[in-house]
Image 1: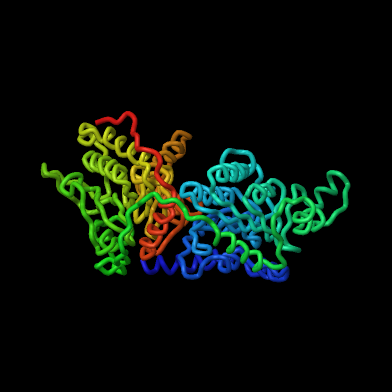
Image 2: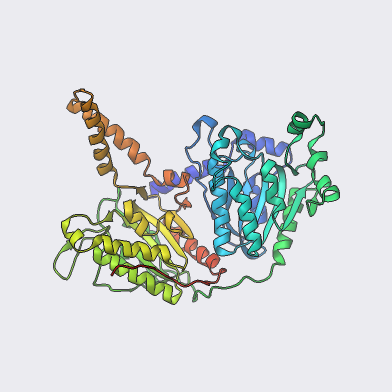
Length: 531
Protein backbone atom coordinates (compact mmCIF):
# COMPACT_ATOMS: atom_id res chain seq x y z
CA UNK A 1 0.00 0.00 0.00
CA UNK A 2 2.78 2.43 0.85
CA UNK A 3 4.48 1.69 -2.48
CA UNK A 4 1.16 2.30 -4.24
CA UNK A 5 0.79 5.61 -2.39
CA UNK A 6 4.33 6.63 -3.34
CA UNK A 7 3.44 5.93 -6.97
CA UNK A 8 0.22 7.90 -6.56
CA UNK A 9 2.12 10.90 -5.21
CA UNK A 10 4.68 10.79 -8.04
CA UNK A 11 1.94 10.55 -10.64
CA UNK A 12 0.04 13.42 -9.06
CA UNK A 13 3.16 15.60 -9.11
CA UNK A 14 3.40 14.87 -12.82
CA UNK A 15 -0.24 15.90 -13.27
CA UNK A 16 0.37 19.14 -11.35
CA UNK A 17 2.88 20.21 -14.05
CA UNK A 18 0.03 20.53 -16.54
CA UNK A 19 1.39 21.08 -20.04
CA UNK A 20 4.98 21.11 -18.81
CA UNK A 21 7.72 23.56 -17.88
CA UNK A 22 7.87 25.30 -21.29
CA UNK A 23 4.13 25.94 -21.36
CA UNK A 24 4.24 27.26 -17.79
CA UNK A 25 7.14 29.55 -18.74
CA UNK A 26 5.06 30.97 -21.61
CA UNK A 27 2.28 31.74 -19.10
CA UNK A 28 4.76 33.59 -16.91
CA UNK A 29 6.05 35.60 -19.90
CA UNK A 30 2.48 36.88 -20.35
CA UNK A 31 2.36 37.75 -16.61
CA UNK A 32 -0.34 35.11 -16.10
CA UNK A 33 -0.83 32.64 -13.26
CA UNK A 34 -1.29 28.95 -13.94
CA UNK A 35 -4.65 27.31 -13.23
CA UNK A 36 -3.41 25.82 -9.95
CA UNK A 37 -1.84 29.13 -8.88
CA UNK A 38 -5.16 30.87 -9.53
CA UNK A 39 -6.98 28.38 -7.33
CA UNK A 40 -4.32 28.62 -4.62
CA UNK A 41 -4.86 32.38 -4.55
CA UNK A 42 -8.65 32.20 -4.64
CA UNK A 43 -9.43 29.40 -2.18
CA UNK A 44 -9.51 29.76 1.61
CA UNK A 45 -6.22 28.45 3.00
CA UNK A 46 -7.72 27.11 6.22
CA UNK A 47 -10.34 24.95 4.50
CA UNK A 48 -10.01 21.68 2.57
CA UNK A 49 -10.02 21.46 -1.21
CA UNK A 50 -11.44 18.22 -2.63
CA UNK A 51 -10.06 17.89 -6.14
CA UNK A 52 -12.24 16.22 -8.76
CA UNK A 53 -10.74 14.45 -11.76
CA UNK A 54 -7.04 15.05 -11.10
CA UNK A 55 -6.24 11.96 -13.20
CA UNK A 56 -8.77 12.70 -15.96
CA UNK A 57 -7.08 11.98 -19.29
CA UNK A 58 -4.25 9.98 -17.68
CA UNK A 59 -2.39 8.07 -20.45
CA UNK A 60 -5.04 9.14 -22.98
CA UNK A 61 -4.50 10.93 -26.31
CA UNK A 62 -0.81 9.98 -26.76
CA UNK A 63 -0.87 11.09 -30.41
CA UNK A 64 -1.90 14.59 -29.28
CA UNK A 65 0.69 14.77 -26.51
CA UNK A 66 -1.71 13.92 -23.68
CA UNK A 67 -4.24 15.96 -21.75
CA UNK A 68 -3.11 16.21 -18.09
CA UNK A 69 -6.06 16.51 -15.67
CA UNK A 70 -8.29 16.79 -18.73
CA UNK A 71 -7.03 20.34 -19.30
CA UNK A 72 -9.04 21.61 -16.32
CA UNK A 73 -8.37 21.89 -12.60
CA UNK A 74 -11.47 21.75 -10.42
CA UNK A 75 -13.15 20.52 -7.29
CA UNK A 76 -15.01 21.50 -4.13
CA UNK A 77 -13.44 24.19 -1.98
CA UNK A 78 -14.22 27.31 0.05
CA UNK A 79 -14.13 30.95 -1.00
CA UNK A 80 -14.76 33.57 1.71
CA UNK A 81 -16.00 30.78 3.96
CA UNK A 82 -18.60 29.54 1.46
CA UNK A 83 -18.38 26.01 0.05
CA UNK A 84 -18.46 26.04 -3.74
CA UNK A 85 -17.32 24.32 -6.93
CA UNK A 86 -14.36 25.86 -8.77
CA UNK A 87 -13.38 25.19 -12.40
CA UNK A 88 -10.16 26.55 -13.91
CA UNK A 89 -9.10 25.99 -17.52
CA UNK A 90 -5.42 25.02 -17.78
CA UNK A 91 -4.01 27.16 -20.57
CA UNK A 92 -0.73 25.22 -20.47
CA UNK A 93 -2.53 22.18 -21.91
CA UNK A 94 -3.14 22.86 -25.62
CA UNK A 95 -4.06 26.50 -24.87
CA UNK A 96 -6.90 25.27 -22.65
CA UNK A 97 -8.63 23.61 -25.62
CA UNK A 98 -11.43 21.15 -24.91
CA UNK A 99 -10.67 17.48 -25.50
CA UNK A 100 -13.52 14.96 -25.13
CA UNK A 101 -12.41 14.24 -21.56
CA UNK A 102 -12.37 18.01 -20.84
CA UNK A 103 -16.05 18.20 -21.65
CA UNK A 104 -16.81 15.16 -19.52
CA UNK A 105 -14.91 16.61 -16.55
CA UNK A 106 -16.50 20.06 -16.78
CA UNK A 107 -19.93 18.47 -16.99
CA UNK A 108 -19.10 16.41 -13.89
CA UNK A 109 -18.15 19.56 -12.00
CA UNK A 110 -21.39 21.25 -13.05
CA UNK A 111 -23.30 18.12 -12.03
CA UNK A 112 -21.81 18.37 -8.53
CA UNK A 113 -22.88 22.01 -8.30
CA UNK A 114 -26.38 21.12 -9.51
CA UNK A 115 -26.87 18.13 -7.21
CA UNK A 116 -25.73 20.03 -4.14
CA UNK A 117 -26.93 23.54 -5.06
CA UNK A 118 -23.38 24.85 -4.64
CA UNK A 119 -22.20 28.15 -6.13
CA UNK A 120 -19.79 27.60 -9.02
CA UNK A 121 -16.86 29.78 -10.09
CA UNK A 122 -15.36 29.51 -13.58
CA UNK A 123 -11.81 30.76 -14.19
CA UNK A 124 -11.88 30.97 -17.98
CA UNK A 125 -8.79 30.70 -20.18
CA UNK A 126 -9.57 28.45 -23.15
CA UNK A 127 -9.12 28.34 -26.91
CA UNK A 128 -12.40 26.40 -27.26
CA UNK A 129 -12.96 22.98 -28.82
CA UNK A 130 -9.82 21.03 -29.82
CA UNK A 131 -10.52 21.05 -33.56
CA UNK A 132 -8.78 17.77 -34.55
CA UNK A 133 -11.27 15.95 -32.28
CA UNK A 134 -14.30 18.19 -32.77
CA UNK A 135 -16.52 15.27 -33.77
CA UNK A 136 -16.04 13.76 -30.30
CA UNK A 137 -16.78 16.90 -28.31
CA UNK A 138 -19.15 19.15 -30.25
CA UNK A 139 -22.66 17.86 -31.08
CA UNK A 140 -23.88 15.10 -28.75
CA UNK A 141 -26.02 15.34 -25.63
CA UNK A 142 -23.11 15.05 -23.18
CA UNK A 143 -20.76 17.21 -25.25
CA UNK A 144 -19.73 20.88 -25.30
CA UNK A 145 -23.21 22.34 -25.76
CA UNK A 146 -24.47 20.72 -22.55
CA UNK A 147 -22.30 23.17 -20.59
CA UNK A 148 -24.45 26.12 -21.65
CA UNK A 149 -27.67 24.19 -21.11
CA UNK A 150 -26.44 23.59 -17.55
CA UNK A 151 -25.62 27.31 -17.21
CA UNK A 152 -29.23 28.08 -17.97
CA UNK A 153 -30.63 25.38 -15.67
CA UNK A 154 -28.44 26.42 -12.74
CA UNK A 155 -29.45 30.04 -13.21
CA UNK A 156 -33.12 29.04 -13.17
CA UNK A 157 -32.54 27.08 -9.95
CA UNK A 158 -30.93 30.08 -8.23
CA UNK A 159 -27.40 28.62 -8.17
CA UNK A 160 -24.81 31.40 -8.15
CA UNK A 161 -22.40 31.34 -11.12
CA UNK A 162 -19.40 33.66 -11.37
CA UNK A 163 -17.05 33.77 -14.37
CA UNK A 164 -13.62 35.38 -14.27
CA UNK A 165 -12.23 35.67 -17.81
CA UNK A 166 -8.45 35.58 -17.48
CA UNK A 167 -7.57 34.60 -21.03
CA UNK A 168 -9.23 33.61 -24.27
CA UNK A 169 -12.94 32.76 -24.32
CA UNK A 170 -13.72 31.86 -27.90
CA UNK A 171 -16.63 30.76 -30.12
CA UNK A 172 -19.33 28.73 -28.31
CA UNK A 173 -17.30 29.05 -25.11
CA UNK A 174 -18.07 32.77 -25.11
CA UNK A 175 -21.57 31.98 -23.89
CA UNK A 176 -20.37 30.51 -20.58
CA UNK A 177 -19.35 33.78 -18.85
CA UNK A 178 -22.30 35.66 -20.29
CA UNK A 179 -24.74 33.02 -19.02
CA UNK A 180 -23.20 33.35 -15.55
CA UNK A 181 -24.54 35.81 -12.99
CA UNK A 182 -21.51 38.09 -13.09
CA UNK A 183 -18.59 38.36 -15.53
CA UNK A 184 -15.20 39.73 -14.56
CA UNK A 185 -12.34 40.36 -17.02
CA UNK A 186 -8.60 40.99 -16.77
CA UNK A 187 -7.35 43.88 -18.92
CA UNK A 188 -4.90 42.92 -21.66
CA UNK A 189 -5.47 39.21 -21.09
CA UNK A 190 -9.18 38.36 -21.05
CA UNK A 191 -11.08 38.32 -24.32
CA UNK A 192 -14.58 37.18 -25.31
CA UNK A 193 -15.72 36.77 -28.91
CA UNK A 194 -17.65 34.35 -31.09
CA UNK A 195 -14.91 34.54 -33.75
CA UNK A 196 -11.31 35.64 -33.23
CA UNK A 197 -9.38 38.10 -35.41
CA UNK A 198 -8.17 35.47 -37.89
CA UNK A 199 -11.64 34.03 -38.45
CA UNK A 200 -13.16 37.50 -38.74
CA UNK A 201 -10.58 38.33 -41.42
CA UNK A 202 -11.31 35.10 -43.28
CA UNK A 203 -15.10 35.43 -42.98
CA UNK A 204 -15.77 39.10 -43.68
CA UNK A 205 -12.36 40.61 -44.54
CA UNK A 206 -12.21 42.85 -41.45
CA UNK A 207 -8.81 43.57 -39.88
CA UNK A 208 -9.06 43.95 -36.10
CA UNK A 209 -6.98 43.06 -33.05
CA UNK A 210 -8.19 40.86 -30.18
CA UNK A 211 -8.42 43.67 -27.60
CA UNK A 212 -10.55 45.90 -29.80
CA UNK A 213 -12.68 42.98 -30.94
CA UNK A 214 -13.46 41.53 -27.52
CA UNK A 215 -11.13 42.71 -24.78
CA UNK A 216 -12.01 43.90 -21.28
CA UNK A 217 -12.36 47.58 -22.23
CA UNK A 218 -14.60 46.74 -25.20
CA UNK A 219 -16.94 44.57 -23.16
CA UNK A 220 -17.19 46.83 -20.10
CA UNK A 221 -17.49 50.13 -22.02
CA UNK A 222 -19.11 49.32 -25.38
CA UNK A 223 -20.97 45.99 -25.52
CA UNK A 224 -21.89 45.90 -21.83
CA UNK A 225 -21.31 42.15 -21.82
CA UNK A 226 -18.87 42.15 -18.89
CA UNK A 227 -19.56 43.63 -15.46
CA UNK A 228 -16.09 44.39 -14.06
CA UNK A 229 -12.53 44.76 -15.34
CA UNK A 230 -9.27 44.63 -13.41
CA UNK A 231 -5.62 45.37 -14.16
CA UNK A 232 -4.32 42.09 -12.70
CA UNK A 233 -5.48 38.55 -12.10
CA UNK A 234 -5.03 38.98 -8.36
CA UNK A 235 -7.33 42.02 -8.33
CA UNK A 236 -9.89 40.05 -10.32
CA UNK A 237 -9.77 37.11 -7.90
CA UNK A 238 -10.04 39.48 -4.93
CA UNK A 239 -13.35 40.72 -6.35
CA UNK A 240 -14.57 37.12 -6.74
CA UNK A 241 -13.89 36.66 -3.04
CA UNK A 242 -15.84 39.83 -2.20
CA UNK A 243 -18.81 38.68 -4.29
CA UNK A 244 -18.80 35.30 -2.54
CA UNK A 245 -18.63 36.96 0.88
CA UNK A 246 -22.00 38.62 0.28
CA UNK A 247 -24.02 35.52 -0.66
CA UNK A 248 -27.00 34.68 1.50
CA UNK A 249 -26.89 31.63 3.75
CA UNK A 250 -27.51 28.26 2.02
CA UNK A 251 -30.52 26.07 2.71
CA UNK A 252 -30.13 22.92 4.83
CA UNK A 253 -31.23 19.33 4.28
CA UNK A 254 -30.97 18.75 8.02
CA UNK A 255 -28.58 15.79 8.01
CA UNK A 256 -27.55 15.08 11.57
CA UNK A 257 -24.08 16.06 12.72
CA UNK A 258 -22.60 15.61 16.18
CA UNK A 259 -19.22 16.79 17.44
CA UNK A 260 -16.61 14.97 15.29
CA UNK A 261 -14.46 12.38 17.05
CA UNK A 262 -11.51 10.44 15.69
CA UNK A 263 -11.62 6.64 15.38
CA UNK A 264 -10.42 4.87 18.54
CA UNK A 265 -8.53 2.35 16.44
CA UNK A 266 -5.38 3.49 14.65
CA UNK A 267 -6.37 4.74 11.18
CA UNK A 268 -2.86 4.14 9.81
CA UNK A 269 -3.56 0.42 10.13
CA UNK A 270 -5.72 0.84 7.01
CA UNK A 271 -2.42 0.51 5.15
CA UNK A 272 -1.94 -3.06 6.35
CA UNK A 273 -5.45 -4.57 6.46
CA UNK A 274 -5.97 -5.20 2.75
CA UNK A 275 -3.94 -8.15 1.39
CA UNK A 276 -1.86 -7.48 -1.70
CA UNK A 277 -3.59 -8.47 -4.92
CA UNK A 278 -7.10 -8.41 -3.48
CA UNK A 279 -7.59 -12.19 -3.60
CA UNK A 280 -7.24 -13.09 0.08
CA UNK A 281 -9.81 -12.67 2.84
CA UNK A 282 -9.89 -9.86 5.40
CA UNK A 283 -12.48 -8.49 7.80
CA UNK A 284 -14.21 -5.37 6.44
CA UNK A 285 -15.24 -4.46 9.99
CA UNK A 286 -11.59 -3.67 10.66
CA UNK A 287 -11.70 -1.11 7.83
CA UNK A 288 -14.98 0.43 9.03
CA UNK A 289 -13.71 0.74 12.60
CA UNK A 290 -10.77 2.83 11.34
CA UNK A 291 -12.97 5.14 9.30
CA UNK A 292 -15.82 5.96 11.70
CA UNK A 293 -16.00 8.17 14.79
CA UNK A 294 -14.99 6.39 18.02
CA UNK A 295 -14.75 3.18 15.87
CA UNK A 296 -18.47 2.74 16.60
CA UNK A 297 -20.58 0.70 14.17
CA UNK A 298 -24.20 -0.26 15.01
CA UNK A 299 -24.73 -3.25 12.77
CA UNK A 300 -28.11 -3.93 11.14
CA UNK A 301 -29.22 -7.62 10.87
CA UNK A 302 -25.75 -8.71 11.96
CA UNK A 303 -26.51 -12.44 11.77
CA UNK A 304 -28.32 -12.41 8.44
CA UNK A 305 -26.93 -11.86 4.93
CA UNK A 306 -23.42 -11.79 6.33
CA UNK A 307 -21.50 -11.12 3.08
CA UNK A 308 -22.79 -7.55 3.26
CA UNK A 309 -22.24 -5.41 6.34
CA UNK A 310 -24.95 -2.80 6.93
CA UNK A 311 -25.10 -0.42 9.86
CA UNK A 312 -25.11 3.08 11.28
CA UNK A 313 -22.09 5.15 12.26
CA UNK A 314 -20.72 8.68 12.21
CA UNK A 315 -17.99 10.02 9.97
CA UNK A 316 -16.51 13.34 11.11
CA UNK A 317 -19.68 13.82 13.14
CA UNK A 318 -22.10 13.15 10.26
CA UNK A 319 -24.62 10.32 10.72
CA UNK A 320 -24.22 7.77 7.91
CA UNK A 321 -25.55 4.39 6.88
CA UNK A 322 -22.79 2.08 5.67
CA UNK A 323 -23.15 -0.75 3.14
CA UNK A 324 -19.90 -2.71 2.79
CA UNK A 325 -18.77 -6.00 1.29
CA UNK A 326 -17.52 -8.46 3.92
CA UNK A 327 -14.43 -10.25 2.60
CA UNK A 328 -14.18 -13.13 5.08
CA UNK A 329 -15.83 -16.52 4.57
CA UNK A 330 -19.07 -16.67 6.55
CA UNK A 331 -21.48 -19.40 7.62
CA UNK A 332 -25.26 -19.10 7.46
CA UNK A 333 -27.70 -20.35 10.10
CA UNK A 334 -28.17 -23.41 7.86
CA UNK A 335 -24.47 -24.17 8.13
CA UNK A 336 -23.75 -23.18 4.51
CA UNK A 337 -20.46 -21.41 3.72
CA UNK A 338 -20.61 -18.18 1.74
CA UNK A 339 -17.63 -16.59 0.01
CA UNK A 340 -16.50 -13.13 1.05
CA UNK A 341 -16.93 -10.35 -1.50
CA UNK A 342 -19.89 -12.12 -3.16
CA UNK A 343 -23.47 -10.85 -2.89
CA UNK A 344 -25.91 -13.67 -2.02
CA UNK A 345 -29.72 -13.53 -2.05
CA UNK A 346 -29.95 -12.92 1.71
CA UNK A 347 -27.34 -10.15 1.76
CA UNK A 348 -29.02 -8.39 -1.19
CA UNK A 349 -32.36 -8.63 0.62
CA UNK A 350 -30.83 -7.15 3.78
CA UNK A 351 -29.11 -4.29 1.93
CA UNK A 352 -32.32 -3.32 0.11
CA UNK A 353 -34.19 -3.06 3.42
CA UNK A 354 -31.36 -1.09 5.03
CA UNK A 355 -31.30 1.42 2.17
CA UNK A 356 -35.06 1.94 2.64
CA UNK A 357 -34.47 2.56 6.36
CA UNK A 358 -31.80 5.19 5.66
CA UNK A 359 -34.13 6.98 3.27
CA UNK A 360 -36.88 6.90 5.89
CA UNK A 361 -34.53 8.51 8.42
CA UNK A 362 -32.79 10.92 6.01
CA UNK A 363 -29.38 9.41 6.63
CA UNK A 364 -26.74 9.64 3.85
CA UNK A 365 -25.38 6.34 2.54
CA UNK A 366 -21.74 5.28 2.24
CA UNK A 367 -20.83 2.27 0.08
CA UNK A 368 -17.48 0.53 0.64
CA UNK A 369 -16.87 -1.63 -2.42
CA UNK A 370 -14.82 -4.81 -2.55
CA UNK A 371 -17.18 -6.98 -4.57
CA UNK A 372 -16.62 -9.76 -7.09
CA UNK A 373 -20.29 -9.95 -8.12
CA UNK A 374 -23.48 -11.86 -7.36
CA UNK A 375 -23.45 -15.57 -6.53
CA UNK A 376 -24.15 -17.91 -9.46
CA UNK A 377 -25.16 -21.57 -9.73
CA UNK A 378 -28.36 -23.61 -9.35
CA UNK A 379 -28.69 -23.17 -5.59
CA UNK A 380 -28.38 -19.42 -5.86
CA UNK A 381 -30.80 -19.25 -8.78
CA UNK A 382 -33.37 -21.37 -6.93
CA UNK A 383 -33.07 -19.15 -3.86
CA UNK A 384 -34.01 -16.14 -5.99
CA UNK A 385 -30.70 -14.29 -6.46
CA UNK A 386 -32.04 -12.40 -9.51
CA UNK A 387 -35.14 -11.27 -7.60
CA UNK A 388 -33.20 -10.14 -4.53
CA UNK A 389 -30.39 -8.64 -6.58
CA UNK A 390 -32.92 -6.64 -8.59
CA UNK A 391 -34.49 -5.49 -5.33
CA UNK A 392 -31.14 -4.15 -4.12
CA UNK A 393 -30.39 -2.44 -7.46
CA UNK A 394 -33.88 -0.88 -7.37
CA UNK A 395 -33.31 0.45 -3.87
CA UNK A 396 -29.92 1.94 -4.80
CA UNK A 397 -31.28 3.50 -7.99
CA UNK A 398 -34.31 5.08 -6.30
CA UNK A 399 -32.63 6.19 -3.09
CA UNK A 400 -33.04 9.94 -2.61
CA UNK A 401 -30.55 10.48 0.22
CA UNK A 402 -27.05 11.38 -0.99
CA UNK A 403 -24.80 8.40 -1.71
CA UNK A 404 -21.01 8.24 -1.48
CA UNK A 405 -18.92 5.38 -2.85
CA UNK A 406 -15.37 4.33 -2.02
CA UNK A 407 -13.88 1.55 -4.17
CA UNK A 408 -11.51 -0.17 -1.77
CA UNK A 409 -10.72 -3.33 -3.73
CA UNK A 410 -12.59 -5.25 -6.41
CA UNK A 411 -15.54 -3.73 -8.23
CA UNK A 412 -16.68 -6.34 -10.71
CA UNK A 413 -19.75 -6.81 -12.88
CA UNK A 414 -23.21 -6.28 -11.48
CA UNK A 415 -21.65 -5.96 -8.04
CA UNK A 416 -20.42 -2.53 -9.16
CA UNK A 417 -24.01 -1.56 -9.94
CA UNK A 418 -25.56 -2.90 -6.74
CA UNK A 419 -22.87 -1.19 -4.64
CA UNK A 420 -23.59 2.23 -6.18
CA UNK A 421 -21.07 2.46 -9.00
CA UNK A 422 -20.84 5.57 -11.16
CA UNK A 423 -24.03 4.71 -13.08
CA UNK A 424 -26.08 5.05 -9.87
CA UNK A 425 -25.32 8.71 -9.19
CA UNK A 426 -23.12 8.75 -6.11
CA UNK A 427 -22.52 12.38 -5.12
CA UNK A 428 -18.81 11.49 -4.95
CA UNK A 429 -16.99 8.28 -5.90
CA UNK A 430 -13.31 7.73 -5.12
CA UNK A 431 -10.94 4.78 -5.35
CA UNK A 432 -8.10 3.58 -3.17
CA UNK A 433 -4.89 2.61 -5.01
CA UNK A 434 -5.91 -1.04 -4.43
CA UNK A 435 -9.10 -0.71 -6.52
CA UNK A 436 -9.85 -2.91 -9.54
CA UNK A 437 -12.85 -2.07 -11.75
CA UNK A 438 -14.03 -4.38 -14.55
CA UNK A 439 -16.89 -6.51 -15.79
CA UNK A 440 -15.19 -9.55 -14.22
CA UNK A 441 -11.88 -10.58 -12.61
CA UNK A 442 -8.79 -10.51 -14.80
CA UNK A 443 -8.07 -14.25 -14.76
CA UNK A 444 -11.63 -15.27 -15.69
CA UNK A 445 -11.90 -12.58 -18.36
CA UNK A 446 -8.54 -13.45 -19.94
CA UNK A 447 -9.41 -17.15 -20.15
CA UNK A 448 -12.81 -16.34 -21.68
CA UNK A 449 -11.23 -14.04 -24.27
CA UNK A 450 -8.58 -16.67 -25.00
CA UNK A 451 -11.21 -19.31 -25.69
CA UNK A 452 -12.93 -16.97 -28.14
CA UNK A 453 -9.70 -16.12 -29.97
CA UNK A 454 -8.46 -19.72 -30.11
CA UNK A 455 -11.83 -20.90 -31.45
CA UNK A 456 -11.67 -18.19 -34.12
CA UNK A 457 -8.16 -19.21 -35.18
CA UNK A 458 -9.07 -22.89 -35.29
CA UNK A 459 -12.11 -22.12 -37.44
CA UNK A 460 -9.64 -20.66 -39.96
CA UNK A 461 -7.78 -23.97 -39.99
CA UNK A 462 -4.84 -22.80 -37.89
CA UNK A 463 -3.12 -25.09 -35.39
CA UNK A 464 -2.41 -23.48 -32.02
CA UNK A 465 0.51 -24.91 -30.06
CA UNK A 466 0.43 -24.90 -26.27
CA UNK A 467 3.29 -22.38 -26.14
CA UNK A 468 1.44 -20.06 -28.54
CA UNK A 469 -1.71 -20.37 -26.48
CA UNK A 470 0.17 -19.42 -23.32
CA UNK A 471 1.79 -16.42 -25.02
CA UNK A 472 -1.63 -15.29 -26.25
CA UNK A 473 -3.09 -15.70 -22.75
CA UNK A 474 -0.27 -13.64 -21.24
CA UNK A 475 -0.84 -10.88 -23.80
CA UNK A 476 -4.59 -10.82 -23.21
CA UNK A 477 -4.13 -10.86 -19.42
CA UNK A 478 -1.68 -7.96 -19.52
CA UNK A 479 -3.99 -5.87 -21.69
CA UNK A 480 -7.06 -6.65 -19.59
CA UNK A 481 -5.29 -6.01 -16.28
CA UNK A 482 -4.12 -2.59 -17.52
CA UNK A 483 -7.78 -1.70 -18.08
CA UNK A 484 -8.82 -2.58 -14.51
CA UNK A 485 -6.47 -0.25 -12.63
CA UNK A 486 -7.76 2.77 -10.69
CA UNK A 487 -5.75 5.01 -13.05
CA UNK A 488 -7.63 3.67 -16.07
CA UNK A 489 -10.91 4.32 -14.23
CA UNK A 490 -9.89 7.79 -13.03
CA UNK A 491 -8.67 8.75 -16.50
CA UNK A 492 -12.19 8.15 -17.83
CA UNK A 493 -13.91 9.65 -14.77
CA UNK A 494 -15.49 6.35 -13.73
CA UNK A 495 -14.24 7.58 -10.34
CA UNK A 496 -13.61 11.16 -9.23
CA UNK A 497 -10.07 10.40 -8.14
CA UNK A 498 -7.61 8.09 -6.40
CA UNK A 499 -7.00 8.78 -2.72
CA UNK A 500 -4.89 7.84 0.26
CA UNK A 501 -7.11 5.72 2.55
CA UNK A 502 -6.47 8.26 5.32
CA UNK A 503 -8.23 10.92 3.20
CA UNK A 504 -11.47 8.90 3.07
CA UNK A 505 -13.09 10.43 6.18
CA UNK A 506 -12.41 13.99 5.04
CA UNK A 507 -13.74 13.45 1.53
CA UNK A 508 -16.96 11.84 2.75
CA UNK A 509 -17.40 14.63 5.31
CA UNK A 510 -16.94 17.36 2.68
CA UNK A 511 -19.34 15.52 0.39
CA UNK A 512 -22.06 15.41 3.04
CA UNK A 513 -21.45 19.07 3.93
CA UNK A 514 -22.09 19.88 0.26
CA UNK A 515 -25.13 17.61 0.03
CA UNK A 516 -26.59 19.21 3.16
CA UNK A 517 -27.09 22.43 1.18
CA UNK A 518 -29.78 20.86 -1.02
CA UNK A 519 -32.88 19.95 1.02
CA UNK A 520 -34.62 16.68 0.13
CA UNK A 521 -37.92 17.52 -1.52
CA UNK A 522 -38.78 14.13 -2.99
CA UNK A 523 -39.84 10.86 -1.39
CA UNK A 524 -38.33 7.47 -2.16
CA UNK A 525 -40.49 5.44 -4.52
CA UNK A 526 -39.41 2.00 -5.71
CA UNK A 527 -42.21 1.14 -8.12
CA UNK A 528 -42.69 -2.59 -8.73
CA UNK A 529 -40.63 -4.33 -6.05
CA UNK A 530 -40.43 -8.15 -6.11
CA UNK A 531 -40.62 -9.71 -2.64
